[in-house]
Length: 101
Image (tube, rainbow, N blue to C red):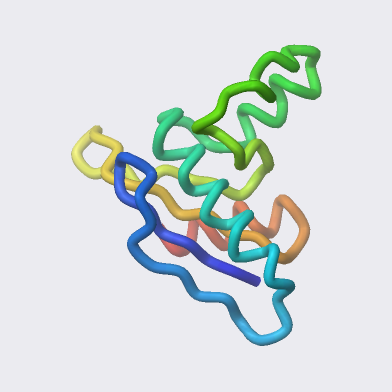
């Protein structure tokens, strides 16, 4: 799996790609984290909206991690960043991201 941490503006702070993780996993983890940080909601929310028919979200240029696994980091009610995880099942990605935040 790959684990990415971004600041509140979606800028990467750190990335760890574990042994055996596909190279694309690192890119996907960063995008999931960026999506959660910029959108101020879990990336899963976008996936659910798109699956529900709001496909217009696919055209938003700054938000590309529209899959489960991006979780905001909130301190004193403010989003200060986000964690994105990729490489296992979607619900497991989110579980790891929650633990990592």
